[in-house]
Length: 444
Image (cartoon, rainbow, N blue to C red; front, side, top):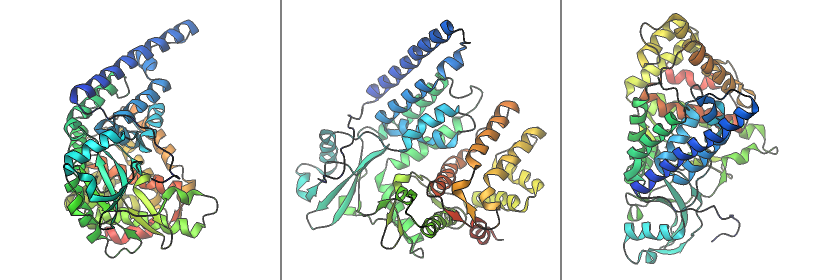
């Protein structure tokens, strides 16, 4: 076991449906108790204490994020998704609190790891490995990753799924949604049924590591002409539906590029590769890795090659959908509002006969988020104000103009990738000519 890696916080994963349901019940009770305390404080302080504002306080938001990180599974994954997707409908303190879910989860204790491996590999599974590091390399929402060495010397990264996660996906998603409604974190008039069903579909896929193994092989073939990108190979003899055996890749976290000593050309080259990948995925491959969590990227320093570690959240898109999205981008680049509105209606961002001020607001929002694409020349992600401006415009559209239409379900995970890739480039302060990258891919 490495002595350089500090031990992670460990907690047992609640695996049974009844146990997980009980945890949600406790969270609901905490909301009520927290609201009572906050309401009492405001009452004696002479402040207004309506139910929504009492429940919508930063302490409640942070407490919810902490509880979801310990539940793990679909509950944590949905929290991650909402922290990126819903800045226009969630209060800022809630979105900021959920941002901690994009970092790391508790690790399950060794006893649970042993039980999972025993169930997947059978009795005497230890004989398959010359070495197994009990301190995980990473712990996320669906599983955690351990370094291991096979008896034949292969250096492996074993992705081990938390017990009970696959069976609890539907109930977890429904319970998180109910909890958000209870806490008044989501406006009651928004119909999230399509988004929730899409989340369940995607999460069921992520919980099947045989599907992820196939995604890794497919993605590696698509990236054969991209020497700056690498996907770990799969070891089929040690892979099951709940354990994924991959090549272990050594590298530095992408956040290492945020240091003051990193040369700007290096930041720019990594940012350019990431942006080119996003648009090739959407407009050329029609197949996308939709989870841009920073932990899913490693930089191999010698070649400055980016290793893409997680293909569980991959999604295939219908070519017709990708063409509709290309129509939006082409209209945004040309500044043609008439074409932009028609494209927004075609993809589902707008109803055909939307109220004029709302339709105009959606057009403004699309043009704003397309700013890096529309900018001629090098775009400085590190100096961009697009995230805060988008949040402000989204709140204005939702609460002043009353536009509370949820995004089309098939765009939810696409949005996660687009937003996350922007944040990655902003974090490493990359400067990229995005306009030049995207034009050939959309036929311009």
